[in-house]
Length: 122
Image 1 (cartoon, rainbow, N blue to C red):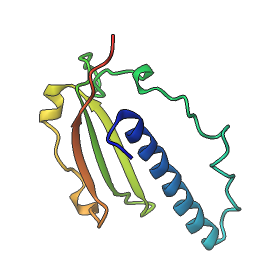
Image 2: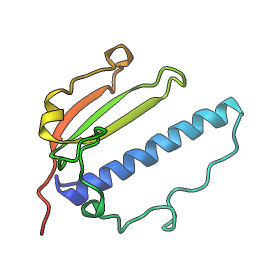
Image 3: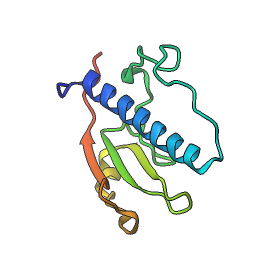
């Protein structure tokens, strides 16, 4: 898959599906949940999702600047011991303040990444 906007959206969608399946398999093996609904049906997956429709303001409370970067951190959540992905869109000033904050919850698939947002087409 090429490194394009559509490719990244598809990769993210696939990762969400894989994580959902892993979580459900774990829950089913514990016996506290039934079988999940099939995620591969067209009605469950929004194939027409367009990131350009999403709000692009800084995620920080009180900041009305346009977001310039996407900050992603994947870590193990303390209470559920499940992997969590936290993504925030931040302006340049607030991005400078960011750094890995959950290193105590790092594991093999730990990720901390800052990527510039693509320019919006007008």
